Image (cartoon, rainbow, N blue to C red):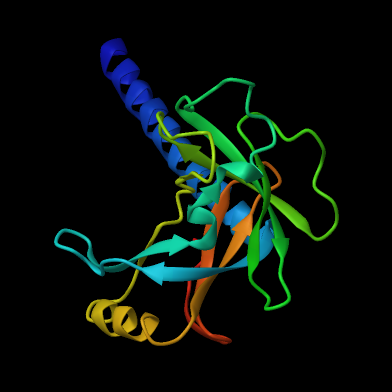
Amino acid sequence: MSNGRTLVFSALALALVQIGFLSWMIAGRAAVLRNGQEVLLKVEPVDPRDLLRGDYVYLSYDISRIPVKLIADIPAGKQTNDEGRITVRLKKDADGYWRAASAWLAKPTSPADAGEVDIVGHIAAGWTLSGDATIAPDYGIERFYLPEGEGLAIERDMRVRPFGIRAAVSKDGVPQIKALMDGDQMLFEEPLY
């Protein structure tokens, strides 16, 4: 009898831990969408289809290619980077889109001013850190899934007129896509949950 109760309590405890972990993940994403600093990024399409998950648009941004000359903390004599994070400081341009103003391979040397946002990305090892080279960070917002049948039409439209995304960026630099924009018109909005 005691073993049966222990088994039931163990199963309940395991279920509560799993539910708690999933809730924590969902609430964290929703918190960024609800409370994060909103930025508008101009996008460039790549490929709209995933056989397992359906239509999507693979997104590339102006901030997907960071000129090495914007990186403020490259150690003297370092020719290539190690794998790790990059913090990119964004500023809003006159056209409403946010663009890279500076970047750091470590933590920024100063806090972001009003009208600036720090976004954190990941870079693979081996990018050249000299001259006019660029590096390509991954911010985790490079795919946007769409309703079935929408991907090809949107990709085609992206090639003839400007599209963007509205993203929310948390205080620690983590971005989440809020909406896919066709100029000033919102096409798809991500739900909080």
